[in-house]
Image 1 (cartoon, rainbow over the protein chains, first blue to last red):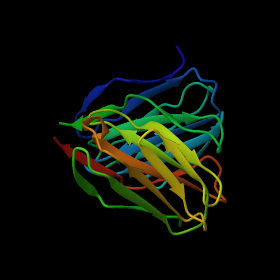
Image 2 (spheres, rainbow over the protein chains, first blue to last red; image 1 turned 30 degrees about the vertical axis):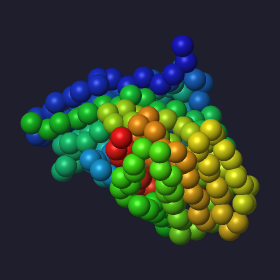
Image 3 (spheres, rainbow over the protein chains, first blue to last red; image 1 turned 180 degrees about the vertical axis):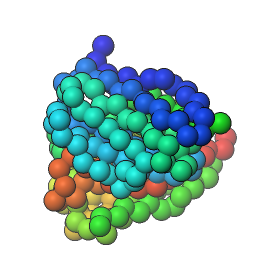
Length: 112
Length: 112
């Protein structure tokens, strides 16, 4: 089945540690995105990538890093520089600017 | 920068009643999309509007794109308990490829 897969579903991190969230898609989509969602709030764009080996900062990129070495993969690293990382992280992909985004199931990150 | 605002933030509806949620952009949009996120779930695409003044219907849901392409609305008739969730609009600016700007969403609660 085609789709977009995020792992893990739940992640716990100690303060000062970096963690990497996985996002894989087999939809052959060019564009991929990372969003952060806080309780009762909308989706805020962290990073997005239009093609392999290229990505741009979104609205809240500070404290995060990404890579796009393969078309199907777009991992997000939450670094220790992110002061308030506890949130629900959503990865999405789309074929073009004229088509819909498909979202993964999300990763819930908690700092302990 | 482009901003997308949704009102109301919360909507309590009696089962069987109608309601409307609104989406307003500070800039002209190339297209707008609507998503639904069930509690504990991830956003799922509902529809896309592209043309000025466009109206689309999906069963009890009616979506409209404003003439100036700066606002949109979602009207639900005869609300059911299955309509519970948060409805997001997402607009693409005319000068940004592949980048969605999501509104904060309207959280809908349905009482039997």
